[in-house]
Length: 313
Ligand SMILES: [Zn+2]
Image (cartoon, rainbow, N blue to C red; front, top):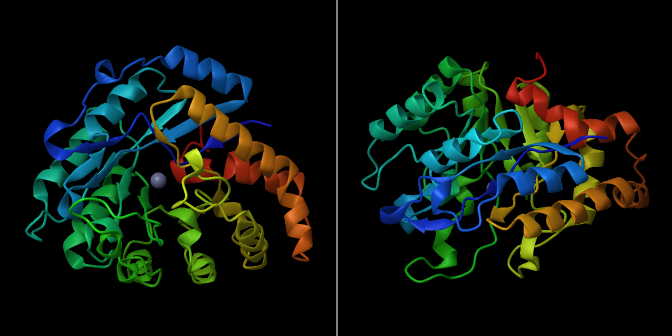
């Protein structure tokens, strides 16, 4: 069974806004050939990558839009690269420059989606100042990923964790306005919207273009003490998603952040092994029927294709 990793930040690492990396030439030991060979061994056929803009509150990015496009150039059939944006600037004013940059990144450089992270940028996803980004995504026919969940964070200089990602900006119901006002917009609510998974599934029942990924639930990379794996909750959530009739819009993502082929491949190996060999045992422990092979294939490989619009190829 082929696997698609629908959510990563491969080759995107935290960088101060004034020293962004824009080309793979700036990545030490960049070796796409080696990465693809290792992914072949794991039968991982495609992976998504995305930068993340966090300039408003912490003055940083993960990677950059230019770097995202440059990485994708090395294997455009296998890499689904996104742009990122904060729709409001540091003064809280609509970020027209970033909107123009998004259009250019998609039209001229072939990026295939957009990441928005409201809790990191301290704005609400239903803020009308953000709507031009949704209009543009519909016009460009690209999906949006939302980080719209709790985030485990540690204190960092100048940005204490307690103020970094307030939960009020992550509430799922904010996205209902977006789904109602932009029914054509395809979007992914990352991390099953934890801790509001059931609210998200309810939203998904009424809005067929809303998807979700399971990133961060199994085995967060590096075993960081601030990033908690919660496989039992994931098993419960997948059972719930099936009961709500939305399981065919749930997909796998590793959420790897970093530049190490070994680290990324090890993470994939651990997570795929759990999904194939451990998940059904945990679902049965909750009283849910195990995933059928068709449901498993959807989760690991096929469901994300509809979001990316690759199911029509
Ligand atoms: Zn992520």
